[in-house]
Image 1 (cartoon, rainbow, N blue to C red):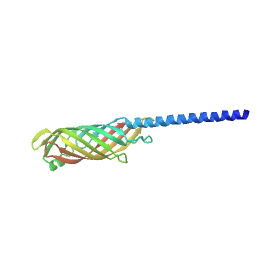
Image 2 (tube, rainbow, N blue to C red):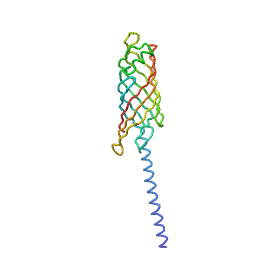
Image 3 (cartoon, one colour):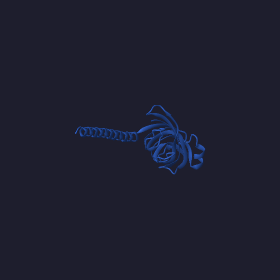
Image 4 (tube, helix red, strand yellow):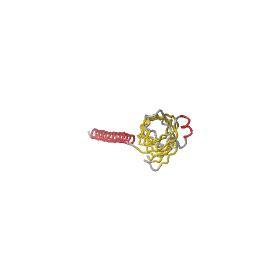
Length: 198
C-alpha cells in the first residue's frame, strides 16, 4: 500500500513537472512568435545620400521581411521613400543628348518599393516626382511618373548591443522618368548610400 502511494506521488510529481515544462515552452513559443511579429511589423527609418538623379538626400520608411539575429541583415519587404535633390548635377551631358533638356532644378518625389527578400534585396518601385527643369528655353514645373528597378545590399554593420545595430546599405537602380505634361523621358542610373539604426 505504501509503495502504491509513493508511486502515485512520483507519477503526480512527474506530471506536474511535465505540465510546467509544457506551459513554459508554450509561453516561450508564443512570446517568440509575438516578438517576431512585432519585429517585422514595425516601421523603421533610414536616411540616405543620393549621388545620381537627382543628387540630394532621401528618407525611407520600411518594414523588414524577417528576423536575422545573427548578423542584423536588412532584408526589406516594403518601403516608402521621399527624396529631394537637384536634377542633372552629374548627368547633365547625358540628359542634353537624350532630350530637349537644358538644365535641372530642385526635384522632389515619393515612391513605394516592393522588395524580394533574397540576396541583394531586389525591388521594383513606383512613384511620382515634381519640381522645376528647363525644357526648350522654358523653366517651369514638370510632374513625372517614376519607375525604379534595382537592388540594395548591406555593406557595413556595427553591433551596438544585443538588440540594436547601425547599418549602411548601398542601392543602385535604373530610374525611368516620364514627364506627364511634356514629351520628355529618360532612363538613368540612380545610386546612393543609406544609413539605418535597427
